[in-house]
Length: 348
Image 1: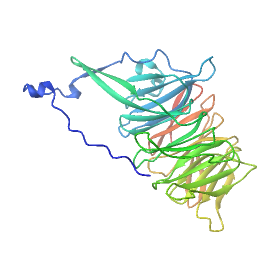
Image 2: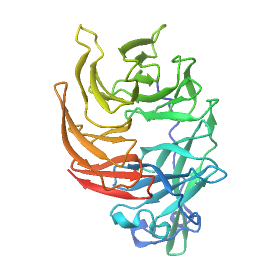
Image 3: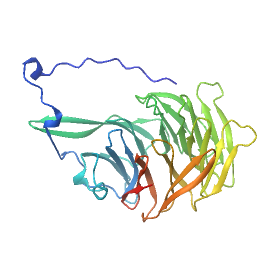
Image 4: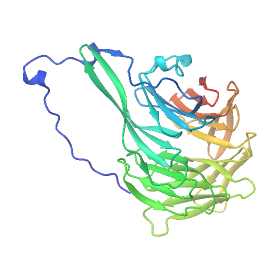
């Protein structure tokens, strides 16, 4: 799988530059609250993510109303923790016609969202100048729908922004950075696919399913999938890579398992029931020294994974409903978002 090459565009001169006027720097303009912001934020917060500048996005869904809807919200770096769920404090926001499962920055001003409709959509932060004011808004591209059921997992290759998704239709899809469909595998598993994780290596990814199986995929091969882990009594619910050869598996019963994908006789390097309920999210710190863990509970945990062993470093229970979003703003600061409509920071 290779990223699509885009032609390099030459920016055209503005009217002011042609006329000989001095260009206005963006820093001298006043950013104003966007008129495009939705009226309210849905209760159930599904994800949170930071870009390299420290700006953050929050995704929300309405899961208890007659129609499932969603929204995404963009906040500037430095926003107070208690202001992140206040629509008046955001830079801009966007209403969505469906609930949102997950979202990631692929560039500093570009995000990819996974939708309950089975689609993925690219959203860009754009701006327009009005005198000495500058107004930001989120521009949504046309959604790409290649699943026949809801999305159940989304991940991104950080090297180029390619996207992998899995759905309740047992399908695995891989998209280019422009969301052109590159590969599709169906059925990728015999039962519900619960998670997908992209490796730091190109073309390599892993999937987990309720049948109790974790598979590693190499999309360059004629037979791309091989099973590296199997446990039908405690099936995997969430996975993430730990280096190039190991995968951390979170189970439906709260276990964390470190799996060696090379299969040299001792595949399970570590296995212990650290948490009480199904693991729903795993997120590495920027330096990959710590792993944040969320379960189907109010708890947020942080563990260290070193030489195949897992050590619990912190557990926080301040949320009052399920935690769904995890993101790091630094190697020592974790943020969590939950169905209790709260965003909390955790110093580790």
